[in-house]
Image (cartoon, rainbow, N blue to C red; front, side, top):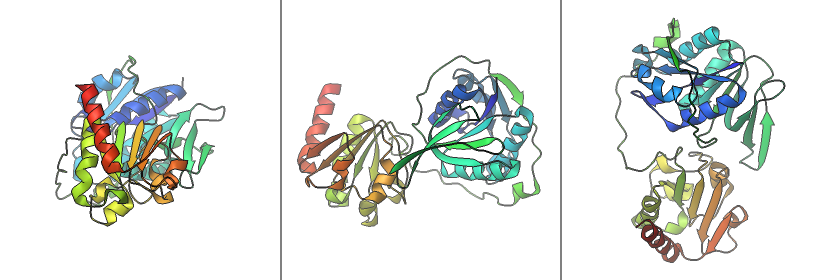
Length: 320
């Protein structure tokens, strides 16, 4: 069976959820070969094998931390030479998309970004994407070379399946460009205790209807009761009510959770482009004519300051 290279997103050996989702997709089109780079790469093998990886290629060179994306591209190019894969799957983060684009150029292949599904096809892997601000769904494949595909988080379930997980050291020869841009310092992002926005299974977002930064705790309380991430519309972010890092939309972050709750958000196309692929969408808005209601699975016409606290209390009581 053909092999599929999966780029492993991990932090000091702790594998992040989008990688486990990629392993699920990889098994649909071949045998997953995981490529783990940087400090703690060897510690990922157990988890990767437990989710179907037949081989785990590791390289713990310091270049992956000391410099930007080029060393990782060098490593994936080396992995492609060793494996001769039918596809390379990469998490669809900002870094992941840059790595994928550079790799595709190096190996003379096409690249597909922000896929929401990947399946086997007669002529190669077929990827599903949302196009034109999520107004259309497309299915496409790479017609030249190895398919390099970035996949959005929450596009596939995490399915534990025993794999051989044979660990092999990946030999990487770093290019002259690998040390061109050095990382001088890092400042860890302050933790909120909530899930990462783009990876969360549930997202609760607030918009212009929240009417001020002092009212966002209403949104946060619902999110915390559900174990959800907190998002915000562009209007709320531009007004300074919530950090830009939490913006959901065409100029913010794209999310695809199992459940998306939009509170006080009208549903402008800019916002819809960032959340329209969510599995279930619930909207709370006092304007019955708001465009968001054309999109949702469930809509509540009412004042969010009455509805959201009651919803929070109900969730809390049921959990209790």
